[in-house]
Image (cartoon, rainbow, N blue to C red; front, side):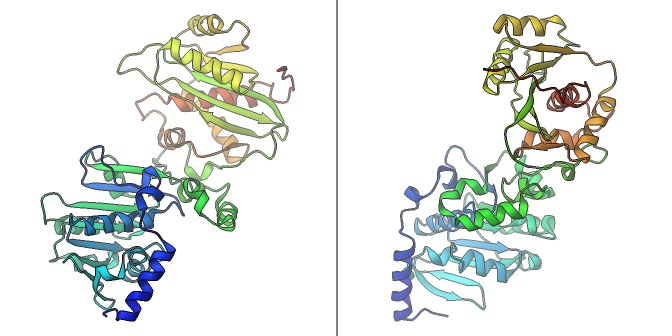
Length: 419
């Protein structure tokens, strides 16, 4: 239907009052279209309330008003969801486009025609076969991770993007394990932007944040719905996402704090990272993973990092595996700080045997993470004993630290001496 003159005026006034047209000033850097390298797909993996819809709408409107793209497909899980969120929603396209820029909007056809000749057509992924025939030079896909037949949809959309010299697609979604998302994350022609709900906290109602935290805090969905992290799960892995619980300690009455290290003794291109994990043990007999500081560095560099964390967290001890480096690890630490408390541990049993008691602690709810640590958790949930070839450096450091806290008979001792 066409907008009458009065409706156009009222709509224009509402838009100008509600959302000034200064997106480049309002947007956070991660909400602006990537310009650092060429791309075919811009994948925004972000938590609820991040501003994904607004980002998609503003990007499309910029494409239209600068005449960069003229035939654009909007795709939601259903055509109704696409229209209600992407077009008519509070952050949808109509909320930011001046009324005089729209020539015609037909709800029944799902088509928006613009005064400059551009056209947006709305589709539902549940009827992806309707993408056969139409052709576009750009597309915006919202909540792709919810689609039921993602691979079939993605194949059809790719065949539709055949106009112009460089078709583009923007995808805004909360992540879930999905073959298409996995493919895109590893695609060199795809720019991936990650963000959490908390990035946009200044623009969200306090009640929303409170309810979101109440709904997801301490569950495996917290990483997905708030922090927008997608943890892969591998068949045969000792850990699964369900075993990992997120929780902030009720207080910081720490009995012990350990900096656990799985050292890399070389610094070649093929060398492993040095696993560095900080773990606290509180008065309630609960362990909390406080930080994953694992990184690839020379021995002299990671030793400085370990000592820095030791002082930052006022730790009781550095626990490090010495199978590879022997006394080298102790010598490097003592050279950097002779007053550091250190314990070397040596592996005499296989990784799986060492890891199984720690997995049990997770199952009993005795180990929690204060926030999602994507790299650590991905390694935990993808390492399969006797199958995974790469050494699990983060996992090893975690296991050494928790073993020292729970299985060495020292966990209940309270002897912190920091002054």
